[in-house]
Each structure stands twice: as structure tokens, then as C-alpha cells.
Image (cartoon, rainbow, N blue to C red; front, side, top):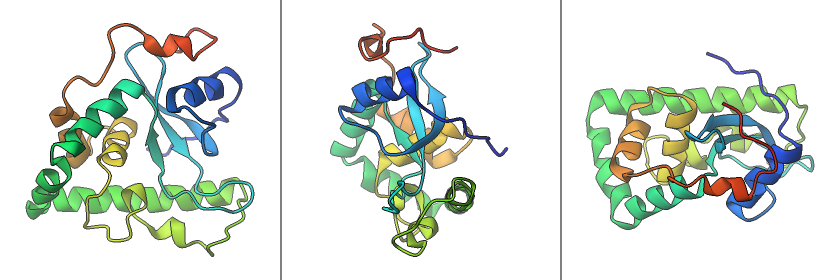
Length: 182
């Protein structure tokens, strides 16, 4: 299912900035929301308006989600989950997810008429900007892909192994000036 991006601006952009503690990269849309309705994953444009690449398509912004996946990474999760690629079905699903991300980045670059300082190299990378599509590097990017595109097996496994993904106290309300969308 192809998504039509809607510009992220105003209060949602401020909310994402508060979640990640800085101004976000150029965004096309909120790709997934937490159970409270706040942004959890954004879809990044592959280049900024000056042509600098940002090859991570789906980026986790929810602080609780980011912390949970970070704890999994720190506990050896990358090595453990990379071993799952020995399963041909999981490896095929990763290849399909990489192919989707490549197509989507190219579509976004065309749709927004983005300049490319790297001659399009970032468009050909895998999940999280990894050059080798058979490698697992950033579990955050796999988790974000699974939330943006449910059904992605390796990402679902990351989410399952990460434990509690969402806060119980609506902490992102501190960053958001408007009520969240359902």
C-alpha cells in the first residue's frame, strides 16, 4: 500500500522536535502513532532542501520506544536478531522491506524534487541506510519500519523483544501543543 505523504509542520513538527531533542530532518509524514495518538515514527525525506542525504526512511521518535529498543541493542540484540537472517523466510522479508524503502525514497525524492549531493547513492541503501541489505545494524530503524508497515517480520521481532514500548503517562503531551490525532 503506497502512502501519500502530508506535510508535517506546526504543532506536530514541534512535538517531534521535543521528542528527539532537536529539529528533525525533513519529514513527509507521521508514519505511526503511539496508543496515546502522539507521533511514534516519522517518514523522513531522503534529502534536505540543500541535497544532503538522510537515508533512514522510517525514524522512531517516541522516547519510550527509542529507550526500549536501545536497551535491546545494548543487551546484544543486534547480534541475536541478525542471526535470524539464517531463516530464508525472514531473509526474504528483509529483502522485500529493503526494496520497499528504496522505492519509497526514490518516489519521495521525485515527488518533492529534492536535490541530491550524493548523486542518488542514499536512495540505494537498505533499512537505516545500511549498504549491505543482508546486514542488521540499527534495531531502531527495523522497529520503525515494522510500526510504519505492519507485517515486517524482523521488525516485529525487534518490537516483541524490546519489551514495554509505550509510556503509561502521556509524557509526550509536554512537547505537543495540540491534542493528538487518533
